[in-house]
Image (cartoon, rainbow, N blue to C red):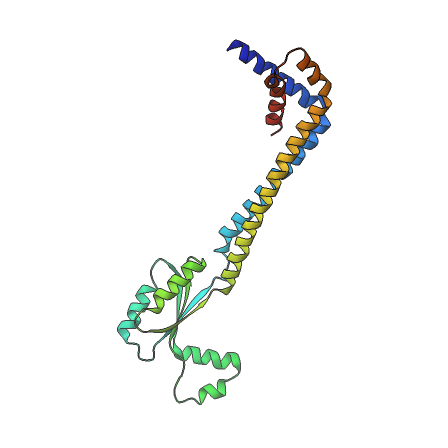
Length: 229
């Protein structure tokens, strides 16, 4: 055991000596490894932060609920009660008279809307969910559309789907980039060790002539690779 520990200590000391005997090579190798590790990590953290901030953007998607023309007061009360639950961030009721007035004011059709005998627009709710993932929005829109008195639902989630798709592409790109840098990292480390082996080819040859084993010769280089990593 002592003999093995003595060999390990000698191999580690030899590796440290070889590591610092060429400071410029060691420095540039360490810089290359640092870039190969830090760049994909920084991009992955940035994508994670963007993913967390996506739900806090001010322009959140909305679900529009259009009520039936024959909706009853009891059904209206049931809809209002459902929209006060915790998965709804905000629910705004728009009576059909207000919707008709807003349509006339925004489109310059005030004279035309004023001449209508009946209001063709339905009562509506504008709902903003707390969670804005595409799956959550689709599930919530389907659930609200099944409420009694709801004639139609309209989901405005195109921008979130594009954002989630862009983030998914970004995550895939980061994984691919990380894989490429991992391969480059292994290539840099192996080439650095190979270069040091070539510079000590004569020393290795002499060690073999005097009876050194392959394990004894290889151990300092393995320690050198571990120290570089």
